[in-house]
Image (cartoon, rainbow, N blue to C red; front, side):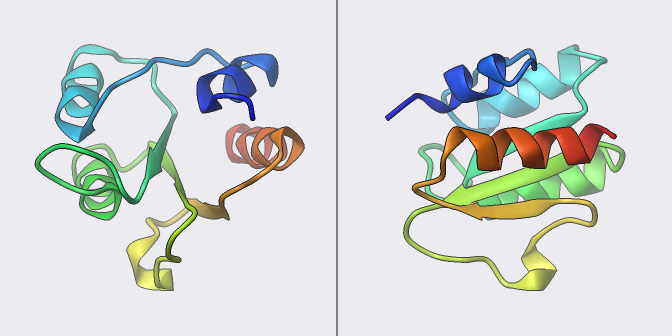
Amino acid sequence: MMMTVDVVEDGGFEALEASNADDAILLLENTDDIVIVLTDIDMPGSMDGLVFAAAVRDRWPPIKVVIVSGKRQPSADQIPAGGVFIAKPYDARTMTEALTRMVA
């Protein structure tokens, strides 16, 4: 199985990696051109992917969010406006098509 960053880059997008939500927030605070954030619901750190997605929605409303999980599906109100949920395992085409639609 390809790593998510490989799927994103092979789809023609630039990927910045963060090991947890706290690191991702630091990236967002220090990088001006992020347009999409991809997060797993279950991740290490002080917040899970759903709390992180809500933080992105509240602090950076223009940024779209892709939420993935192989264990559970978020409710519709947990997915920020303009965001999507993709169940794992997913194929590269599914992810690339979702990202392409989000930047169109």
